[in-house]
Image (cartoon, rainbow, N blue to C red):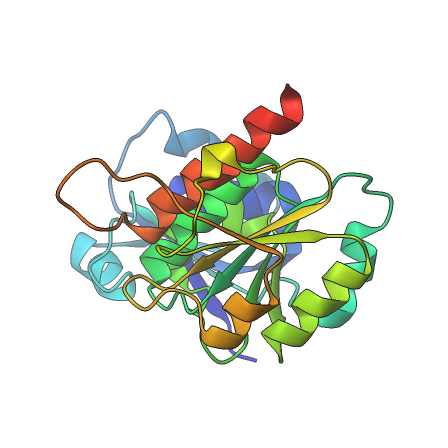
Length: 245
């Protein structure tokens, strides 16, 4: 498995906090003095992690033009999760909240959904192996550290995994424009998985048919849909609101 590049202060801090053994080397913008960056550099130095100073163009090239905040790290891949890990993830969780993404192929959207999931207390994000964005440096940067702590479970057969969750008592709610009731009228308490489909296409037919219920977000304006990460945040935090009530 190839090594990963991560960039940005949040992503580097998250690896420092969770698994610093993953670091191979770190590249830092030459001459940069930054109150937020310095404590990170101090910790990397204390751990004996190799750091190299680099010019802005070299860092921009490594980050493929994305915002890197003056720090890029080459790291060993984090733990890879698959369907066999779900039992351990759910063990001891009386009221788990899960997020399923069916066909989200843009790494920016994947990163933003991971950030939302972490903020909402989601136990794991589940994606199909063959129709999902890779957890690359872009996704990690957008996730602001959540990519390093949120289990991203890649499953071979999404519908089969959904049925296995249902057998464990997890209620599965999918989002679809043709749903007859909206997110605010639905029951989102108890063991729950929320399914978000790809922008434009929505969930695949088999995914939709496997859901226990379908909901939609009420739309008052002229646009017909929301960005998938925005819609994810709305649905997750409505579930959080109901579960805290």
